[in-house]
Amino acid sequence: MSYYFVVVSPTDTPMFEYTFGTSKAGGSGQAHFRNGESSRYMNQFIIHAAIDVAEEVQWLSPNMWLKVIDHYAPTNSHISCFMTGTNVRFMLLHQPGGPPAAAGSRTSTLSSSSIAQNPLSPQTDEAIRQFMTEVYEVWVKTMMNPFYKIGDEIKSPAFRARVAAAGRKWL
Image (cartoon, rainbow, N blue to C red; front, top):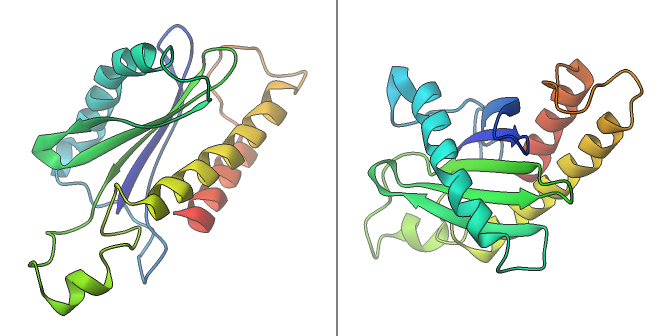
């Protein structure tokens, strides 16, 4: 599965972006989006379109974790969102890798609940929630840094490394 993670400020500007692939089940850790060369820009477009959905869904749930809020059918991408108390959104676009296995085949029954094959399974939902929670803890520590100006882009290599480690751990 390929992932595009972005932290979006309350003014709808990206504060942090990170693209990675799954490290579970023999994954290389590299993202392989279906958009090819234009995947960086398409991912930004898809996330930006989902911001409006996140703003609508936030009023329907008392939780910070909003789960899967949107689906982009042409690439079979799903967008999950975590909303902080200050209206900063952690948005994760996740796209299953490769074509799905044929129904009834042995590989489809064995991996139907794996994170890499089923983006809507409870296991995937829980893994993404754990990832978002861990990133939230790192984000709070970054915001408490006296040298960080609230609303600026997050350029800290330590923050990027911790997000990468959380991605390897949970996704």
